[in-house]
Amino acid sequence: MSTPQAPSATLLVIAYRMAGTIADALRSALAQTTPCEIIVSDDASGDDTLAIAAALLAGYAGPHRVRLRANARNLGLCEHLNVLAREASGDILVFLAGDDIAYPERVEQLAAVFAANPQAQVVGSAVDDIDAGGALLAANVRGLPARVDQRWFLRRGKLATVLGASMAVRRDLLTAFPPLAGTVEDNMLSLRAVLAGDCLCLPQALLGYRRHAHNLGSWVFDRSEAGYAGFERRYRRVLAMYRDIAADQERCVAARPDLPAERRALALELAAMYRLEADMREAILDRPRRAWLPLLWHGLRHPGLRRKSAERAFKLLLPRRWLGRR
Image (cartoon, rainbow, N blue to C red; front, side):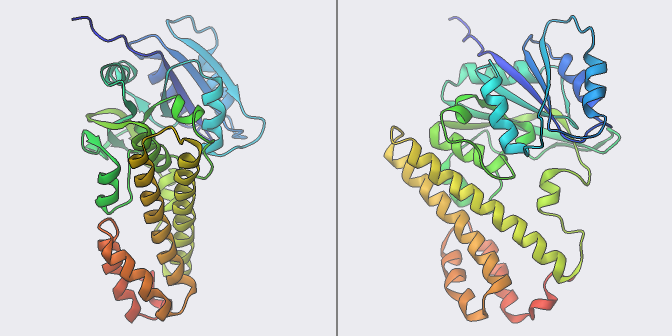
């Protein structure tokens, strides 16, 4: 039996203000064991990121097709991905942030999984957490089960999906759906994957995921600011993100009537779950306590929100100014 042919791959090295790490990321991209297209893209950093990348790539004559580009203005991650998906030639897009380190066989292994699984839309992996200097913090973390579907995401209860930094995606997941709109890509792309096909996650770590204060996910969920003001800012960031995710699912369903009716219905259930979670967070900030009760009741009845809702019920007993205290 012949081995399935691996799809063509584009490795996207995505950078924003990563002057201190872009060289390591680029060296890891160039060290990939399978030839591929590599697009190095700077999102109008305004620091030395682009110059360092250009100097490192000058005179490159290896097996990869490498292109360096930059946005004229800062687009943010989601719109940056929209632009790169239109410019890339690969069937799959492998993401590599300019502060992470891809292990040499990463592209080869991810492409092989896509070849063996024609319905796969997203393939992620576990990662090794590393610190700002590249030292190992924790090995083989942040993974999901080998295969997840819409019902798994509805039941899971943490609203967490495949880590975007570990993802490879079918290019069609961006080009055959409405453009990504929002701040964070992980959840939107994972939920698109289970709407359109399969979402897979490998158990082995395929990259070093650098942990520092400027990680996008760390910023969204940042708990470093004590007191109610910090609590409120974090809640508003997160609820806005959840509404973006819900809106993305709704747009995808509306745009793809060709997809199976059951998957489209489950996608709308996922959108409703994210909207309910956002509404509960907003109620805690802005609405009288009696207005929390219907939302909490709906949350307690939802398998994916039960734990969060039970924890939130205790906040009914606390003055708002106490929220966020350690």
